[in-house]
Structure formats: structure tokens, C-alpha cells
Length: 340
Ligand code: SF4
Image (cartoon, rainbow, N blue to C red; front, side):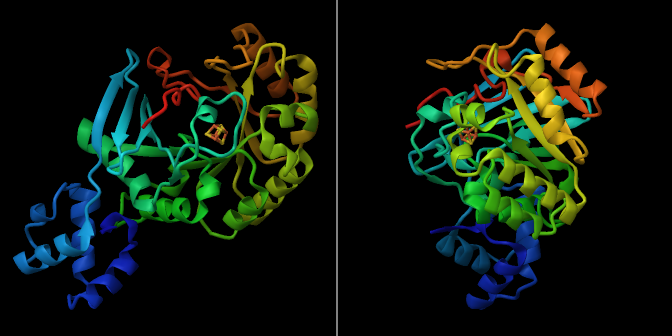
């Protein structure tokens, strides 16, 4: 049975026509799903009993179960959701002064094999559907009773490897009849899938593109991120320049600093050369050590020196605040467990 949250408003109108119902009912259904966040079709009380029965026999409402919930002392909450097919995914809620931000997963497992990421030990099982991506935000809002104002696609999975579902999810998150979260409050990260970056540039979505760069030369980047052997730095940065030219949107570069690997001043100098003149921002992340991982966390003094060098040479750089480290929810350590 299909997940009703996988349909856009327009697709749902078509679906309703097929089952002999008036298309305007689609707006009422979306209101129940995304504004009221009901968990059963029976809760859609302004729909006729007959329509509710039809919906029940044609669709499921995708109501994830919370398998585990860990709360950090800084307010971060890490959820393990049962996605109702025997698999589980993690979603993290981070609380900032500007509002609540949810980090969603896009795949069960990941194919990319980045060496610093704990997801690397988790086999790829399948893509999440657009409705399953959106459901993570709905479930967090239901659980906390608080509105989510920002969404980052930085959980388990390579978002642009699940391109269509991710783009459809973004449209639903952004749509006024969906979750109604501004596109500028949505960030999509990629390890560097160049063809999909070009495709995304054509979508006319005002979300932020975030590139996991992490190294300044191909040898080092390929050793950290196998995707670099297919799309080396030159191609990736050209795609970024073309993306900026097409969208006029600033790109965010993620740079995870690992001790004695990519955190010295020479790396900072190389990074300045690579990004000079680009409409961008650099997010520095002190890397988190993972089980069997080969990288260690850079000292805070080093991270600050690195940031200052970039800022002094015309590249806007900030250090990402680490949230939820006591519950392993900090970036790229949130994926340590095998889920089945
Ligand atoms: S960093 Fe992202 S793309 Fe790389 S292995 Fe981890 S989840 Fe996959």
C-alpha cells in the first residue's frame, strides 16, 4: 500500500479523481497531514466516513514509531525511528536560539564510504521515499509539540544519490500546504555528486547547497572520500561555480578537521586559493573520532587558527557549534549502530 505522504498536492488531486472523489479534498487531507499532523485517517473528521474508508483501503499514513530517544544535556534529541519495514533510521533535533533544526536521513545506509563517517560501516539497504523523509520532521514536531523551523539533509545517506525523492521532499517541506518551511531554511549536503549538482541548479529551489569538501588536494580528498576519484576537486569546484552563477545562491563548504591530516596552515592556504572569489561560506567541524576510524579530532586551538587564517584572507569561515556530543549526535558520529 502506498504512503499517502509520498504524493505532492497535485498528485494527490489526481489520485482522488481516480477514486471518484473531488480534487479539492486533497487540500483538506494535506491540512490534516502537515498542519494538524494526525496519525490516522479516522482523525480527518471533516472528511466523509466513505472517503476515510477509501483512503484506508488505498493508502497508509506512514506513522513512524519511536524506537529510542536520547536527550543531550544541551537539548539535542536523537531519535531512532522504526520505518515500518524492519529497518530503522536516525533523526536529530538540534535547538538553536533561532529555532529548532532537524537533521534528516535520506537513505537506509550509504554507498559513499567516506572514511571519517560512522555510516560507512552500515550497508546500503534502500532509499527513503519523499514521504519517509518528511515524516521524520512531522514525528519530531508531534513528539516535542514544538515547530521545526530549519531542516538539514545531513543525516544518514547521500541526499543527491536519492535525488528525486529528496527534491520531492524539499518541495513538500517548503510548500504552503505542506510543512511550510522557507526554502532558505533548508540545507542539502552532498559529498560531491557533480551531475546532480548541475541538475539541482535547474530546479529553481532556493535551498542552501552544502558541499562536504574536507580536503584541498585530490590525493588527500580521495583518501578520505572515494567519490573524489570519480569527481575530483577541479570538477566539483567548477560545478559549484556554475551552480552559484545559475542560482545566485551562496554555497556552504563543510570542512571537517582531522588532527595532522588536513588541519595545518598549509591546508588553510590551499583552501583560500581554491575558494578565492567564490560566493561561499566555510563551516569548520572538529572531526569526531569513530570506532575503528583512522582520524582524530583536531585541537580547538588549531581549529581557531584555521578559521582565523581563512577569515583574514577573505573567506568567511565559522566553527560549527557541537551539539549532542554526549549522545553521539554530533555530526558524523550519529550513525554508529547497525540498525536491523
Ligand atoms: S559522510 Fe554522508 S555521504 Fe559520506 S558515508 Fe557518511 S552519510 Fe554517506
